[in-house]
Image 1 (spheres, helix red, strand yellow):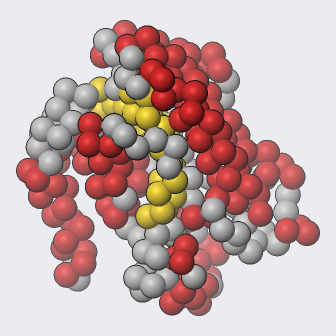
Image 2 (image 1 turned 180 degrees about the vertical axis):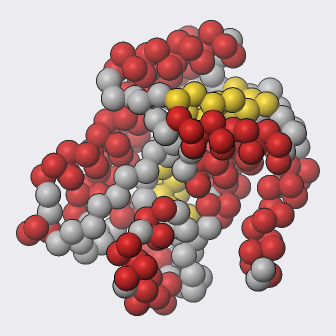
Length: 272
């Protein structure tokens, strides 16, 4: 095991102690909770004292994520398997969470969905799928959970975009367009929800060590991944844990005066 791997393997326990109580008693919903970033956020939040519900359409994976999290870090974490394809699906999820927890303090939207294709060959069906996952789903979730937060007079919403939503990336036209759309509606939501003490912010990660980087394309073309690492000032792609401290800050009371912001978590890639 490399030194970097050892650091990441022990980070969950270390952060649980370092941030203990930072989100004490906060009820949190993480959509996309079966993904590596979603699981890392759940681990950080439980360690900070939050009650966490991981939500994902992949039933086995999200339940396994919640079970492993409960074993790794003391705290409360549950899983809900849900395919949030319609407003009614999102309403049912929100009402179920409200009934189970009494209130929802924090919503994190980090569903995954990426597609790589030259612009002139880009599939319109793929564009629709990217829009559904990266814009439509979080849009609906922000609406239904935003209404719950409005009733209480406070809340935090953190949406995951991408560096691609801020700067163009060749062969990712649909993905960049969808993430830019997410950023745009998040800023409007921040404006309209601010009077109700609800902060809406966006995290824009750079390339991160998640499922796309274990896909056949990158396995067959390691030079592409090396090129990304060489362009990134930090010299590597990100790890899911690289984003969790920022998300915890945005979910905490420390960020009560911050809303409508897009914060790059990209190792400096957006600078080049």
